[in-house]
Length: 290
Image 1 (tube, rainbow, N blue to C red):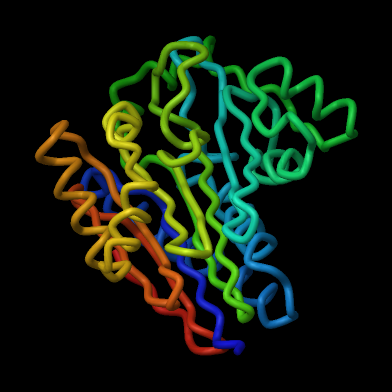
Image 2 (image 1 turned 90 degrees about the horizontal axis):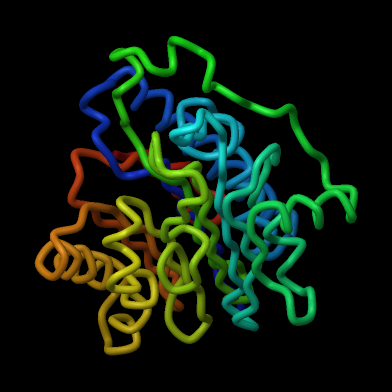
């Protein structure tokens, strides 16, 4: 039996109070991303394609830490991570530490059905992108830019973007994309591209996308934890809050979560000052929050 679809996106949990004007831009980006995914679903598209479409919009926004807005590493280079997961098959596609890729989430999606190769990193991922003629963008090197090292650029407001979707047939998908921590070591990879940490999707339980300090999120495999809580009988909202409580109590971590369970119920929780988000249920109006 088909039901109304649901899409929920986030623009990153973080210290948004340091730049309140940017938070409004981030909320608008989330609205546009939810709408992009909603349009895919209204046209009969899958949860997987809707999640990709939504995250591509977020990757295009310079106010968010993914794609165009990715924070540079300690060398002034942009290195990005992304993953996408199909809750119907449990297939994943992921890339990490990639440069000159405008839409890492779409490159990750190309790997989802590649036999024996679902996760590529660094130059290997970039060579693969060139081999399949995946579009590349100009190199972004900020090492020589004095503005990069100025005190005004020290403000870090957000971390990671993501989307979770339940389509009308009931299939779930989750997607997460990030530029990582500002000033990170070259080659550092956080939770975002790691299955079960940055995202997880299983038609039997829920679809989840995580955001925050990756080192803490990885320690408790937070996205899979949400799914396990749903399997134990919690709703999406209860499961997200329980996982954030565990993150805080067990590893003193900071972050946020969005989820849709297999009943189509949404959930979100965070222990930072804000996490811009937006969601749509069926053809209804898009709801925005923070």
